[in-house]
Length: 342
Ligand code: NAI
Image (cartoon, protein in one colour):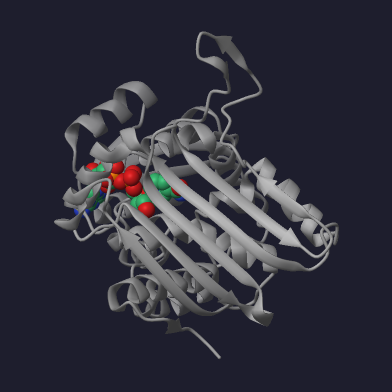
């Protein structure tokens, strides 16, 4: 079966999903796109041959030829668009976060869970080869019991201009909902946690590097300590100012060993020896670092529709991740430790 897809949002990430869906993913045809930017729609038509172009999401989901919708619009639109698309009998892939408030997500959970159509959330790190390799080792008990997980997610300095535009045009949800949400999900995933897996959190932040972000109510650097189930420890660093590129790193310390994923964010296996010394080029942005993960998650979603298989990432994963991200923001705003449970 060829799954016919419509996409909403053709911005920083939407373009990547659109290009993959139209050129690289098997059993998939990108036939429709919605954006409020004409230039983006023209690009989709000319470069990708997308047949149906819309300014209005409701018009796209009324198209009976479309089987599945990719939601890559600003985060605040996700809950409403998920529900509307499911109600129009479409399968739905939504980018993270599922919503910007716990209440918004709780409201749509029954609709998602009672739908006979597929739903998937874009936690693409679960599809990255290195994260999957580490997860297999953890699940096989190779590092014993986890004691601490430390996660860094830092955007490159040269992404600041496009982030400022993104934050001016829409509500990112703040650095913890926008950036740390992947780390929160990864922690839950490694711990095989059925709920949020977090008892309480304390977070800090500043705009030393970009005071201009104060006016947008955003943070450039955020950090947090998380008390996890059974007194395990989580540590998060999120940022938007890595001079060396795109820095996503995860360390899992266990009773019998430690795993580090991308301890230095290398671009590939090449060393450059020149007048600067021995240089290891770094990955420069999220499309480059997670190219394989984006393609794997897209193929997984399309295959789940074609073969009617169950999707591992549930709406509840989105709920728990957002619950923790909001507690982190609340902790920063109030300068208090926030209890999530227990
Ligand atoms: P962006 O600001 O670059 O693009 C937003 C897109 O939505 C644009 O094409 C715009 O025309 C469209 N749009 C805005 N308002 C609209 C409306 N009313 N109707 C239809 N289309 C509308 O945003 P970006 O960075 O591409 O982010 C989009 C989503 O993807 C966000 O939720 C973000 O959190 C998520 N994201 C996820 C990443 C990941 O690592 N999985 C990485 C980057 C973004």
